[in-house]
Length: 365
Image 1 (cartoon, rainbow, N blue to C red):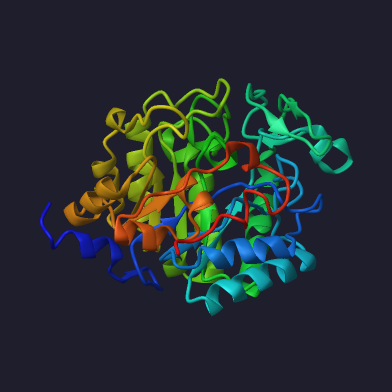
Image 2 (cartoon, rainbow, N blue to C red):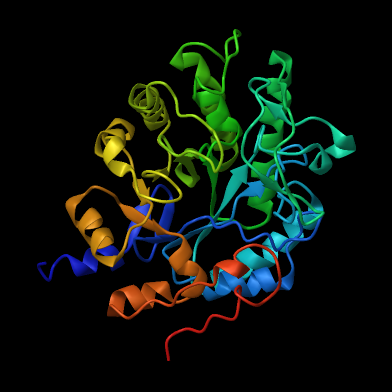
């Protein structure tokens, strides 16, 4: 590999209105260490501060409302207490020289009545029960509850929830927000014809199925400015259980990427394949998706150092998101720069618990 490739991954960049020090992104990583009300502890302040050398940190998926919650001990961004807890984190990241955006999350059908207010049914585009599993406050894992289909006149309320969460994220000191429209959660449930059987203006042809994600992004951009809003997609990701793909992923997601590109957003962030097991990126033309979007592109899924450098040098991606390597390597940027060995994360401490497997991984000497 030529010597002029290496600096590209570590060179600064403008991604929308956000200036980043390098092209390495800390991917959103659910760690399930907030309290039952979705409020972070001081441990999270240290966790994020340790990883602030990333060019950009994308926060763990963060619930926009109580209705949007699908897993116990995940954080929220819709109350004053949430704002105060996140403010300590964003201040710590900024003091360490980093940038951080908040990933706005609504799980849709991937929830359970025990996590919903007054035991209500989860909401979804259509009343189709998910075959995956969710983690409950009882420390047990259950199949998601049967959802109810959102009424058309409820969409306005849903958009208001996204706007409110976006305002809360601004007040909490984030540098921007990422709309989570991936990983088989609410917005992707609308996008895919396998989980959207609606007959109103939010169902049927691709223009209708992508209407809600575009409305959400547009609403949030009115609060933040488009240059501080990103979107995450996962065209061929299946959840743990039986979530099917769209019947024509390339046609659907190319159309969506093209529409998002018209909004002059900060970036498009794509999971290039499956989130687990083999990287199935060869099954989808992500280079064409990038071209359809036309703006900054963050590639994500099983990238190692050499792949990341090649992807940036070739123009395939503007930034590369690393997930699990950031768990055990708080100084991942330095290790990649030096081509130093990477520590292995303890899978047993990925979700829940305290400092062990969270803030106690050492940096290089």
